[in-house]
Image (cartoon, rainbow, N blue to C red; front, side):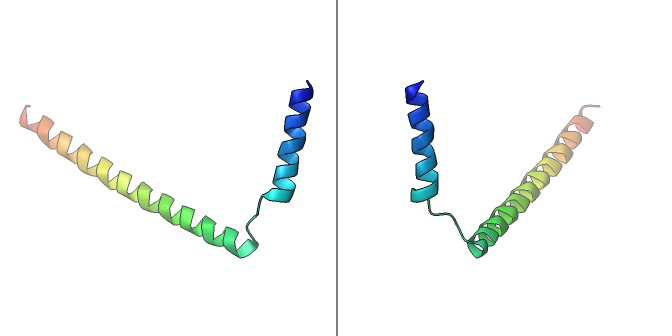
Length: 64
């Protein structure tokens, strides 16, 4: 149990004293980058799904 207590205390000290937290402007900028990348990747996957779906429908229609 002493190891767990020491681990929690050390983790707390590290988070409070050693970690450099971003300021509000940095946080907003990072959030916008993540949001933009998420939207871009979502669009790419959506387009790939649309193309694959139509290609498979076309292939299946050849064998009917």
